View (cartoon, rainbow, N blue to C red):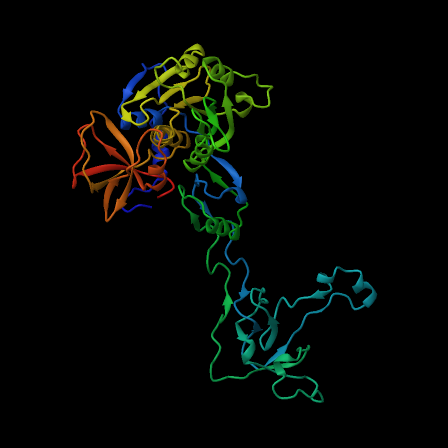
Length: 464
């Protein structure tokens, strides 16, 4: 995470979002050409906070923990050996105990599964010992563990000859004697024995709410008895991509463009906290968008089948003859919450709510950088509102270069160098190379900026 940036998964943010009713009144007048920060706040307040869900540990990677969790059991939950050697009770020398057959009748013994044919030594008394391996449960009554190299075995039968140097290679037998080969180093109580709850006691706090779960968190939860964890539910998203002049593979011809949004949008939406259920191409024109938003629930590609909370569209958000999204939303009776953002690029962002408790529609421009900046500002705030996360934080960084005024706010890719922020050279609406190499999005006010000025930047989720 970038220095000085507030934690993006503050548990208090979810509570505040729920308690203060962040859900916007969709009957409120449409906001036209909102400033970029106002647009984020509007988007953040639009969705209802989704309820948390329980997921199996294997599915919790990168999810946000919804509630703090405690240990279901102590770790370790049994007293165990921390090394190979001898579990001993009291002072030596010790009489050796070994596992014994579960049945005296060999025929009955063979009817048992191999792992149950020998009865382990579960308890030893003062003056007794038994061999254990690292991680084995030590018998009740164990006071310490004598490491293997310190143990000298003396056969119970004096006629047994044990050549010098082979004591450790001989399998000890019931009744043999174990002696400490280095008595000058006295045993300490519980030496090399991991006590019950030595690492974690039952009921101890394991993980705090708001954690983004990594593989070690999942392993810790498993070790303390958890099979599932409560996580924030990701909003379900359907992505509707425009057809116009798009080629999905190979080299495009004149007047055509390679599809880049079909690759980027689902991945970035997941990075921002959503789950993309469908990605579909939509026929050009208002009717194509209307059809995509109202298909029969029986259809395999139906929006209603997906029960999407958010629909993201691309293209057709301007005010030209070919811009159809606004018309389609009006035909469907949607309420336009936000119509345009006063920022470059991404000024064509539309935010609407479909009737009858339908999904929120985030309509993005079709140009790649415009679509991505709209998603990373308005879209990110919308998703955080649905999950109950905090409104995405910004930070302040000193400008390392000057930019002249343009009469509009710009939110453009930039990189960090020696603690200063410098705009990327490629920041046109259709350009992706600048964003590909950027560290942040830089907010440049209408009157431009000068070197040394304190500037606001928006972190990129894959760079924090």
